[in-house]
Image (cartoon, rainbow, N blue to C red):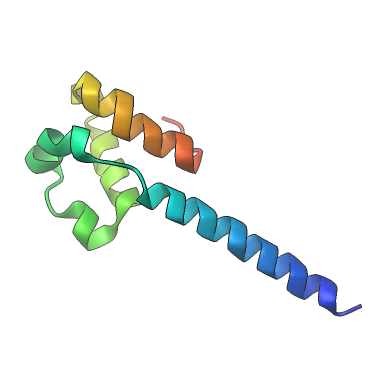
Length: 82
């Protein structure tokens, strides 16, 4: 029964890809002011995880709009917690 490892590996890859694609669907526009001020160019260079980490460093300074929408949505999609 050599097919089982292949199926298991395929399932893990599909589930992992789903999390990545879901994270890419986060709309960061509510955080545009914060991104411009503290994290400009981070997403383009290093991706959404790096942008999330950059904003997390300034968590106390985030606008309610940014924190309650984009930042929290990223946490919800990826399962991250502060």
